[in-house]
Image (tube, rainbow, N blue to C red; front, side, top):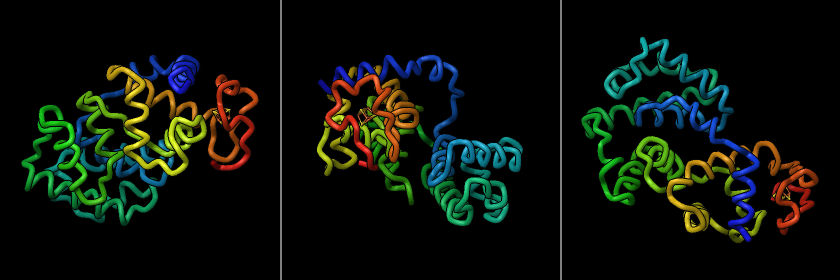
Length: 222
Ligand code: SF4
């Protein structure tokens, strides 16, 4: 039943072209973009990243940001909000990546998946979702990043219990789909969460899986 729902969502959201048109970012750029995206919209996070690039002459790399003046980073990323906290975080992770890792991200492609994930999550302020974004988006590893949309939808459609945490949700979806469809399903679920199965006002009446969903007609953010 859950697989059927995921297949319908994937078909209806039709995100293949969106993914094809994605600009590829380096692992370090992806990391910086995810830090900027915390607690703000994609639009503001993208604007902050572009400002940062402009401020540092398109040199978004660990060395440049490790040596950068924090106030200069802060000024560039203001539009993303929490600019004080985010600039410190950017500086901190850049220093670790430059001085300790020697700017080497090759482990995300080669190391056993859980080892690579552990190393990424040892960076200050970098959680499982950000690590999984890097591993899947940049290194094409078979791991599904779980965001708030995916968490909410998985619970509403009955794929996992209300109490399920990050890794249980991730495993439950990964178990249903082939590895080469993980990115596609990730993006399709996010689109579905933004357009139809919204947090506070889900549009159940025009939802393509309302005939299968146990929460059809739900009113609150559950
Ligand atoms: S029927 Fe409503 S709660 Fe269920 S998936 Fe569709 S929008 Fe979400």
